[in-house]
Image (tube, rainbow, N blue to C red):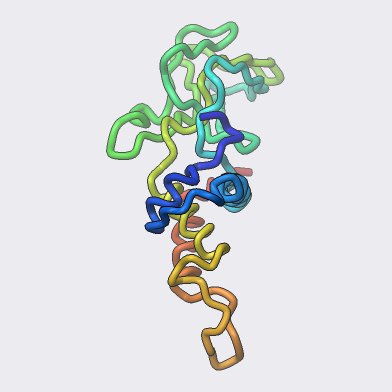
Length: 189
């Protein structure tokens, strides 16, 4: 998948919602892209893998640690094929990012000796992004689209509340909040 792809397909959507009619697949695909971009805006990162072997540039900070989860990029998707210009002795952190039920991106390069000189331009070639789209990201995207399309039990515009009508049910809001808290990048000053 490219970073411009959606996190789910029209086929995924129809399967999740029990729909057989594929006549609106082109529209669903377009809306899936829009929902995926919304998820990125809310979380501050993307969840697909970028093209293989793409080089990104970073500025050294005088320490042995180079953060690579910057500018909306979640980090490095795979340890395979990573090259760091001018440096050969390094480890990718977190060390166990690829392990566990949901592999995560590597967010930092840590030199085993020396430092990234302050102001040094460091080119890093790697596969960027997430190793795979997390299941929760896909499921939340599908449900948000179903709410948007009015094809979810969570879609409502007529739930009476004390103060009036609620545009989204509390259950839908809970779904959005869970996504935001689970996948929003922590901003470091």
